Length: 64
Ligand SMILES: [Zn+2]
Image (tube, rainbow, N blue to C red; front, top):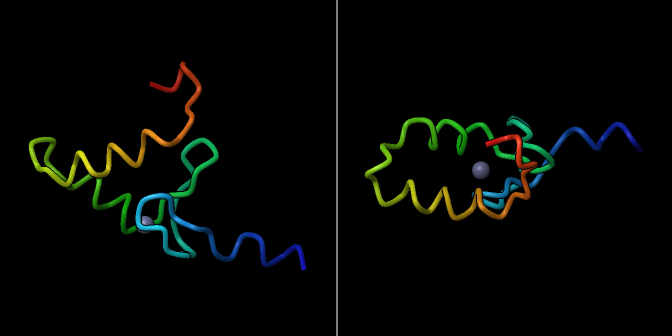
């Protein structure tokens, strides 16, 4: 059943299983959260919530 692998992924932000989204390095972010991050002002407290979650991703140094 290898085909089912790409169906649902667990989003690192909302921790829900979603079908649509992006992979940031090895971590999956669902489309809703991705849109949420992009539409959030950096002065908004929720932005820091997103940032906290994103910090859990181990990024290659060259990424940022
Ligand atoms: Zn999500």
